[in-house]
Length: 221
Length: 392
Figure 1 (spheres, rainbow over the protein chains, first blue to last red):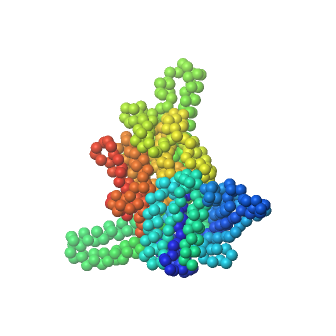
Figure 2: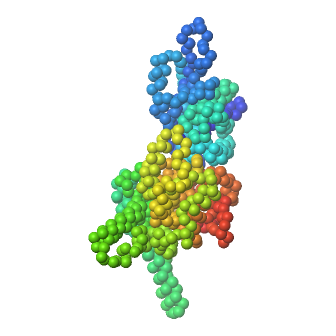
């Protein structure tokens, strides 16, 4: 799988996030020569909470109380679970969602959808999307996924991605967007993930990024 | 001018190929016309110089020629644009996902035009297997002759080595003037052996894994890479052995160099078992499929550009130091381990926007000129395409 970085948009202090910012970010992407639009993309995240079988007994401590489930746009047949407390990731077939529904051991508490536009720029793929809180479609954040197609090694692609990130940040700053994109930093070793990029890496990135997005949106409200 | 019929991508590939061949023909005719026009102008100038009385007529002629030349140039530019759009001049040898196995006609760096790009590879393989078949046939005949007609003393057949077949110089358009060599001259006298070259490269560049294959072995491996790439749990290919993936070095036709996480490079040798490199191509380590061969092209822009540059490097090594061409080439290839980490030696950045290509690329040009000193050639500098000062 090829290397990806995930960033989220941090609005300036005192400003609110609107759909206008999303349009502006897409305009920045389209302003680079050679960029071509490549369709739309969509991922979905579910926050599960454990449902204790017997209400009177305390929940066993070794079972995770919270679970994040992610369905990624480039892997429609799979579903990934992230347990942040235990630093575990599970990769399953997408039909596991029906199993979860039937089992009712964990219930989906709230849902976040990512959807937006996808661009191809030489060996890079950019995906800019809105982070929407499901029930009321409220805009919680804007994320951008950058993928570098030739490489799968995190280590070897580090410098390339860093320079791309700088180029992107400069472009955003020069177009005077009301905020900046912050990269999601994750210590993959804690999750037992290696140098070769996998969907599990993406799942962890999204899990971490969403936490930051929610935190920054709560701060700004 | 005849009406232009655009062969869109909806047309069948044979039509596109025919159109492209037609346009190439037209371009050649236009170029010939331009040459003739230049000749006429020069002649007119010469005549008017010698014969001042005719200078007015000559001036008229010149003006007329100038108009014609301008029209020819405009037409040439249009044809050129059409060719570029249809992918002929960029030399894109994409065999993946291409319908009917046909490619656009390829204009090779040496100027040869190949209507079907796979023709060259097939011709090469056909040539190689024809040599093998001829050798086997000769051996069979000489064995039978010895058995059934022992009384016949025939020096030409009996005394020769089993392997001596002097085949005529094969047409290898990529190579510049080289003396034809029969493959089994005792190479230790003139050139280093393949095994020694590979061993010394392995010590020089420990981060690169080198493997050797016979031609058919490599085709199988390329196909298997396509399926293993889907399994993301696989980190590296298991083959780590330098020596003897093929039984002996006599039949090695493909050398694979893998720098983990950076590149996979294929170098083909022609004839098999020799130390003469024939073609080179760079690929991403996560690519796999039948298009992975030394005359193939990666799907990624960065590797496409490195491969184009590598072609030039190969031609340079072959013309300047044919005996050591393979060593130089392999050293040069190994210097690319830092392809994604080494900054450009001119602008000190890693990624740069190439305006004409509209792409962000790392420095893909690594100068290959050799010093007059023989040893310790380290190809240590790297340039972006736009920063490269060589006129290459």
